[in-house]
Structures are given as structure tokens and as C-alpha cells.
Amino acid sequence: MTVREIFGPSNPVVMRGDVEIPVKALAYDSRRVGSGTVFFALKGLASDGMAFMPQALKNGAVACVADRASDMTLTPGTAFIQVRDARAAMAEAADVFYGHPSHRLHVVGVTGTNGKTTTTYMLESIFRAAGKSSGVFGTIQYRIGGRAVTASRTTPESTDLQLMMNQCLDAGCTHIAMEVSSVALDMKRAHAVRFAAAIFTNLTQDHLDFHHDMKQYLRAKLRLFESLDAGTPAVINRDAPEYERVASSTTGSIISFGVHSPADVTLEDCRLSADGFFGTLRSPWGRHVVSSPLAGAFNVSNALAAISSACSIGIPVDAAIKGIAELRAVPGRMERIDLGKFSAVIDYAHSPDALDNLLSSLRPLTRGRLIAIFGCGGDRDRGKRPMMAEAVARHADLAILTNDNPRTEDPALIMNEAERGFGSFTAFEKIADRREAILSTLDKARDGDMIAIAGKGHEDYQILGTQIIHFSDREVVEDWKRQKNHERSHGERAAPLLSHHDELSIK
Image: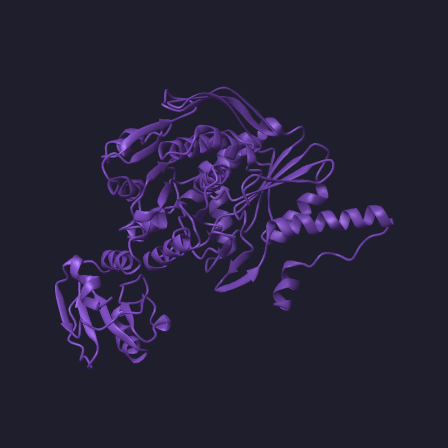
């Protein structure tokens, strides 16, 4: 495929140089450029890709693409392409280069503040129950058939996304469950993807460091539904205040799901417990008993979204129900660890609404005290920090305010900003070291207590300044559990667990 064949359909502003030269690869990072590569010079938040075009050509690029003019000197066998929108052009070029893979797959896109990851895992389980091979792209991993890669971002960049969809085809996949973040939609990473169905879970405050206000945040989400072909299933949460706005943005076929509002798909006679939920599904596909081992009212909503979208693209309802029942856990999402006389729950909740959902779900399942350990991310939306503390104060008996990923901000200042949200709630401690916060709480736990460790979920790292260190909430809890079991079985005190500073020095 030549440069002209790739960019001709997008009607570029300028094409100069050798546009008949074959293309071997696409890249947006000059360090990933090799012989025969087309380099996309994107304007980023910190740097301008046009400054790297000379290096890309030196590394073997056959063409550079930008959305501004350039008078750069071209050598034989190279070209410069000026386009109206570099990100859109990159997505369209990747779609052409990899043979329009989404047109040969059933891609279900899931967007919303909360629930995206769990919904995609539910979809994967449903596809498996239906005998389908699928890929999953999201916050935790990118899974292509039997191969898994740690996710670098929730939604891959467009060139990576189209490549991975092509790899899904090669691996025999027929379906993909994909998280589509608001940032990705704004940055056109999913541009040119043909979706078989799209899901809207909810919208609550998050990512305002990027979107600036809730209006822009919602506007980004709507891009997914505006992109749908006419008649494509648009699966929308009827309980969300934004339902009408989302529904009016698309020419897709609306399927509503909800727990509290009249909807096309709902769960009647729902019973919640520590062992999951149970109820009667009422839907266009009939009435059926549904159960899931995933606890929490919010997982009822996630399950309805997954069932609705799967059935709308032809998956039998029996397979959808089986898939929901067979999904035992999602990494870092309401992940319960039995510690004998009390329990800990690891969860990714890092927004006010997510914390509210987590703690309100755990409250009726708690015999003793509900203890919340949480922190707020640095270099991110500062407005949600006191709101997170306010959510914790509504439900918890005791709160431990600690670090999340402080990044380049002063951890003490982050905690001070969050603390303002506690108001008259005084049952809290501030322990900056996250490991110490967890271990101290575990040591002081009583019979029947429930300890919610929120914010990091599946993550196995912590960002301190510009340094990334290994850190896992789950590993800290499991190490504590092993040590206590050792002490009980040997009647002696085991060696102390590593402190946060010990880990830093080892690294």
C-alpha cells in the first residue's frame, strides 16, 4: 500500500514528494520509526511532533503528516502530507492500512465515568459462554485471544488500536469489548472504528483536569454515540440524568437499561448480598432468572448494560445469563480478601460517585465498622478531592486519608484539600505512607470490620514525584495475611514487612 493509497480517501490539503512509495508501518513517536514508516507529527500537551520530523526522516520515515504547513526539504523517496486534523487523519490512515478490521468484528464500546472495566469483563464472559472468541481493550489489560498485554492507557492510540483489532482477527476473534474513555474520544483514538453497539454507563465528576467542566466532559462522551451508524444499538442507562441528552445525540437504535427507572431492560425482585445479586430479568428477549457472584448494586447496572448490548448484537439471552453467572471477579473491582474475623475489599474507586457506590454497597454487608482507606491523585482534578472525603464521611465509621499517586504535587497539600470535605466528620486519621496506612488499619481491625481500600484497585505501582515504584494494595494485604498466619502457626512473631522507604531504597 502506498502513501497515496492510504491518504487519498481523506482528501489531504497538500501531498508533496514521492507519494507512490510503499508504506510498511505507522508511528506517532519518532523513536518507533523505522524504514518505510509514516510518521504523524501530533501536537501534544508538552511537545510538538513537527519538531521531530527531521529525526523521523533520519530514522527511515517515508512520509511525515501534520495539520500545519511545512517547508521542510524532502529527499528522494520521501513525502510530506498536510491534513486538516492530524489525529483524525492518523485514525483514518490506520483503519485503511490495517484493512478496516472493525468492519469485520463486532466491537462493543463502553463509555462512562464508572463501570466500564467491569462491563467489558462481563461482555467477555458472555461472549465466551456463547462460544465466541473475543478481545478486550481497557484499563487493566489488552487481551487478544489468549495473549494479554498490560494496558498503557484505557483506550489505545488509534494506530495501536487498529493494529490490535487486526491481530484479534488473526487470532480468530469475532467480538471485542472495549472501554472508550472521554480523553480518547476527544483525542480521536476511536475515530474510524465501526462500533456494533455502544454503552453509556453514567457521568459523574472526574477528569476535569482535562475537560475543564462537566459540559465538555459529557460532550466528549457523546462523540461515541454520534459516530454510530443509523440503527446501531445505543445502550443507555435510564437511571442517568444524562439519558435524554445521550439518546438525542445518536441515530442509533435506543435500548434503555435501568434499576430505578422504567427501562427496556431491568431486574425485578432484585436481592443483594455479600455473595452477589439475584433477580428476574425483564427485557425484549423475555423474562429470565439472573444471578451473579459480583456484589454491589452498581454491578446490577453493569450486568444489565452487558446483557442488553450482547443480546442486541445477536448473542442468545441464555448465553448472556450464563456469562454473567460465570464471571467470579474483576481485578481490583470489589475484590474481597477474607482475613478471618474481618475482611478487606480492594477497589479502583477514585471519584466521589465511585466511592459512594462502593461504600453504600458495603454498608449493609458490614457487621462491625466500615473503614475506608483512600487518597486523591496528584496533578489531576483538584475539585473532586473534598467531594471524595464527603462521600466517605456519608458511609464510613472510620476513614484513613492517605496517598494515592501524588505525582509531582505535595502529598500533604493533597490530603489537606481532601480533608475539607469531611466537615463535621471527625473519625479520620491522616497517614501519608499508603503501606503504613493499610498495615496500621489491618493491625487495629476488629471482628466484623470491613476495610475498603480504594483508589488503586488493580494497579501495581505508585507514582511519587516522577518516580514509579512497585506497589500493590492487594500484595500489602496478602503479605499481612501470610505473616499473621505464620505467627499463629509458629507461635512467634515473623520478620516485619518492608516499609515504604525500604522498598524505595531497594529499587
